[in-house]
Image 1 (cartoon, rainbow, N blue to C red):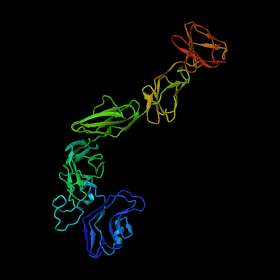
Image 2: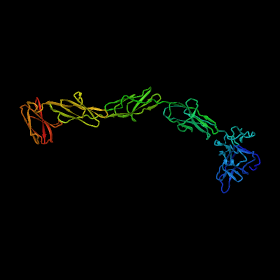
Image 3: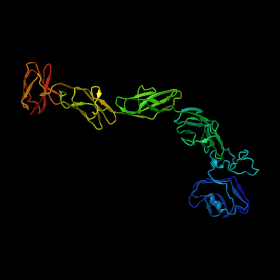
Image 4: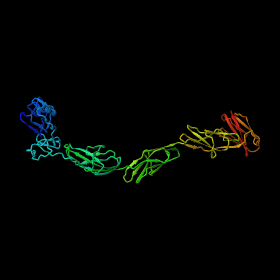
Length: 485
């Protein structure tokens, strides 16, 4: 502008300088005035224009005499005589078809689209003789405005199970690269819709939901032009089927002793199929609603709705199986003896063990120690229990009392043993003419020697200790102790 005394209205213009980089002190600008604070009279106004400078190293948007301005704000502040200067103007690349030969706007010319003001009434057409219509574009080309198009969303309908994700996409959307997109959802056909708040790709043409919940949902893609116009895609109807209920109910304690078992029952329902697991390992053939667990494990059931195909696995139920203790009786002497003698029956011991002794078919009142002294003939057992309450009953230990103690009364079987203590040989002096049997045993009742009608026993190879010699006839027997030195 050379004459600052004239009144000028500068509107709807594109001031674009595409001069390439220069060297030395050369410079160029988009807009020049020969005054420091004005570009025309006080009534002049510049507004709704687009400014652009390609080379910002030695190019300037504005120049006022000797002052250069690189920003729109600095230019507005300098033009004090023309208040309101370029209040609605902008600095942006106009994106012409060709900067030299074709100054038509393109789909990239977003900054020009609909941002102009109403031109003078005598400007009814643009450079192509096309009618200028609102909202008006900046420049002499009233190019086609942005057309919002949400495209065709697919699939149009789908069914999935709760907890799954789902992918949908739209094709045939707006070609304008500055159109923005937003996926929206409603629980009622036709909306109202709300922006999706989870998943991924919510502002692209392909959207992946987060894990879904049961229900029916209606998705659309909203396309919005920079000028504000918008359009929606068709609805994607997503039906989400619920998962079956999957629980396991134990029919009793889940901690028990070896040899016991627990019945586990899965939740019931129509159209159900079952598969049992121990941890992640499938239990082959176990497809009933119940499972009988007899070993330790973490049991769970996978339940499938046979109509919808939806599957859910229960939380695991931990089953603990305790070991039973050993139950063994060790006699501490011969289990066959005469009236008046006894034998100590010793049970195995362990931490936390408790005991109950049994004589014949009945438990012995008060016999709860780890050992029991048997004085009567019978079959003895011991029940051993551990700290987990698991019990085991031992095998029978037979105690026999079928002879008279030596020296207690006169019998037809009278004998003497000498020497006693002995080192090599033991002699037996027997006052009877009938056949007899000689049996030598140790303290635990193990037989060492068994002879018929013999009067001498070789004990030279025996270890030092106490032994028993039993003399038996057809009618009775007598036991004597022998000490081996």
